[in-house]
Image 1 (cartoon, one colour):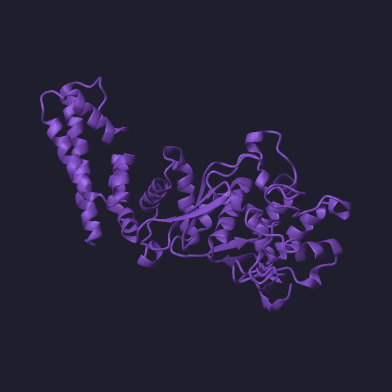
Image 2: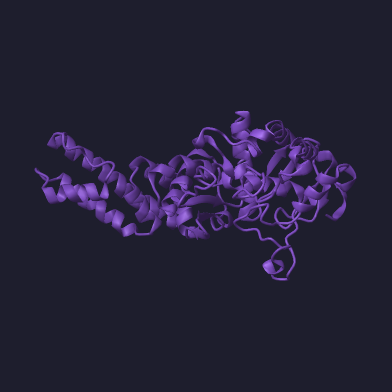
Length: 390
């Protein structure tokens, strides 16, 4: 692939700055970080600056992948639940068709390892054209002494099915796969590798080569530290809801509580959730006003205290008046000497997780209801203040 000069690819010989771009590239970077964290048992959090948008990709991380290249990209794990088929690159696999072939010289898989070690030598990489990261980091032709690696590097220099089969075309077989009848998406060698980890960025990832979750998600944002945390939180709360807006809402709440970051309005408007289902992609955004409310620390903490998805859903749908109505209704019930069956059903409907238990005495039940009612009424006031910028 033609280079755009011999400008040094790195700020230091050990790290390359990666900046957010499109969701495809971003998911690849986040997926790579997840696999590196699992591989090295080193907490990625300590390498992130929450006030910055970029992340420094360390050459050591690619070297770790090189050391474990067979386990990562070639071998099948005998324990099915631990097998990561989406990382395998051999032959006609599901996700990276013929990324690495299986005949002749290609059987020498250690050549792929040597490619990774060359890719980790950041100081020698050159800047090249790339439609994904827009900066482009590639191995110079002068460093390539092996004919197979030379062919391989040319193969991964365009976004095709070998990079990600679900979206990439096969320009040689189907030349009209792109609008200009050419493979018009040149990518750099670094992106050609990072995109192998794209599905690791989604929650949940596939469990085996022929098993695709009915729905998996990736939270895209204008900052890599933000993306890292949001997607980690999404993975931790995924069991609580199958509603993607609720998952995004819960992730934003966790992010707001745990990270001391003030989000600018531009950032609030550029958080989206990418939903991957079999054969389709969907992009969902919350209104900027809703994100503004959820990232208000007082509101986030109050929603966390209440802990009810039904209440979160009202905030997500901007049905703030209903918070007031529910809070007042719970107070009225709490003031009664005896709670009727119809009222118990109402309580369980709006508070499926925190409805007072049947074994509680009436005084304890009333006290519990009053506590929750005041929490919801306080939330109502906080949300209105957040909307008004107070």
